[in-house]
Amino acid sequence: MKVGILQADSVMAQFEHEFGDYPGMFQDVLSNASSRDIEFAVYDVEHEQYPNQIDECHGYVITGSRKSVYDDEPWIHRLRDYVVALHKARIKLVGICFGHQIVAMALGGNTEAADAGWGVGVHESHLITSKPYMQPPLSSLAAIVSHKDQVTHLPDDAELLATSDFCPNSMFQIQEHILTYQGHPEFCKGYSRALMDMREDILGEEVYRQGVDSLNKDMHSEILSKWIVQFIEA
Image (cartoon, rainbow, N blue to C red; front, side, top):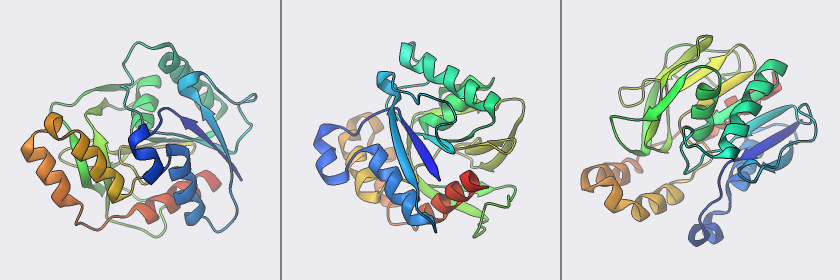
């Protein structure tokens, strides 16, 4: 199986030595979650790098980004168009954080700066339905988040899979080929803490402290990574 990583951002230089870059994070968690070898290809879509053929990979993963999906930048417009093309071709696509938001935006939904403000640390969302690829099953899903934007309106043909009070549209699916999630299965707690420390003044004391304290909670990153692999394989 070949998985394409559509890289929408890079880890900041001061963190890369310790935590690596986003494609490597995804390669690690997805490889560990799979019972068979996965071949990866990385496409730096922030710098207009794309597959030569849309079906070059069995499935694609769109990473997170510091940018907002509603920013008026050429590479973001092109990525939105590529999401539409993948949807029309019914090629497996997984969107994470920014990826979750740009899929919604590209396919008729909406993403905005959230009234709730920043979400950081470990957040829990509740599964409202179950799918065959969700093995082992969970009733709730805890993972690291790091976002100030949210999907506020789902595409018309999207099915909501998970929700929370903080982020009502936490996870959704479109037909059998698109899966998106607001959280970060690829982030470790150390990287989450580093981002929060860097943004402490932006977050404010209460959000920062709650985020740091939440890192004591258990996470389901390994299970979520299995779900992603099993979704792409299905």
